[in-house]
Image 1 (cartoon, rainbow, N blue to C red):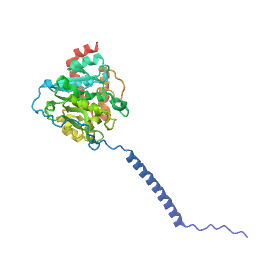
Image 2 (image 1 turned 135 degrees about the vertical axis):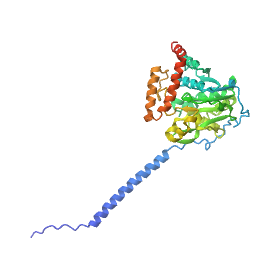
Image 3 (image 1 turned 30 degrees about the vertical axis):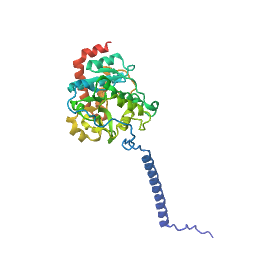
Length: 350
């Protein structure tokens, strides 16, 4: 006699409980993976360089220079920039022209590497008013290991601390990607040996940006810098900027953002930028450069047609965030060409 197969009864509560357990284990596993990933990212995140915490006594100059803060002889003051490649000549030229437009009364000094710059570029610089000064290359420490290749020449900037040899008592250093918007003569009357503006790089940070510096340039300071350059311990990626932050440490006066209006300020806080815009003395084109293609290894001087194309591209970068500031540079460039066209044309025909 055949019997029909009767299935065993199913415990529905057990099945649901099993599914819940599997789901719980899955969620716990995912949570564990996410936790491990977060821990990994946190451990991999680089701690910001804080020179005050990494302090090493490198014997910087005293904070006060002992000189009077009254008006200084303009012949003993200088706005200084540097030129290491022909590709930056239009930035250097427009910077010099903007200094003169702002009626800054000091000399214009341009330290440069003699074997890197062609005569056409030097001629344009002189047409604007720069006095050229040949300086030796200061090689990066550790044969440049760990230093971004674009910054390998930047230690040569330290030569500005030897300008006392040509009679300079006070100097303001400006990177070639800056533009003077208003007079800065007051920087020559500060009683301090060194001043700089806090940097803005992925946020507002405690280190200063080395694109604008107010300084006293005694050669003894340069000698001291050279003596500790290879033994000082600091992040090498930012080259001389990190070194200067470590060297001066607590002996630096923080200047207002208006003296180094880094475009990063506008990225981080558009409202702050808008509030300080009319007070800006020096704008620093960190986020976009209106005269050279960034991350290019081409060292040749751009043609005027190439500058026009670069300007159009710069206006559109970052969804046009810096279009107004690019126009500031562009208008100064046009003014310079209108006034100095014959001299510049003669330079280019050499």
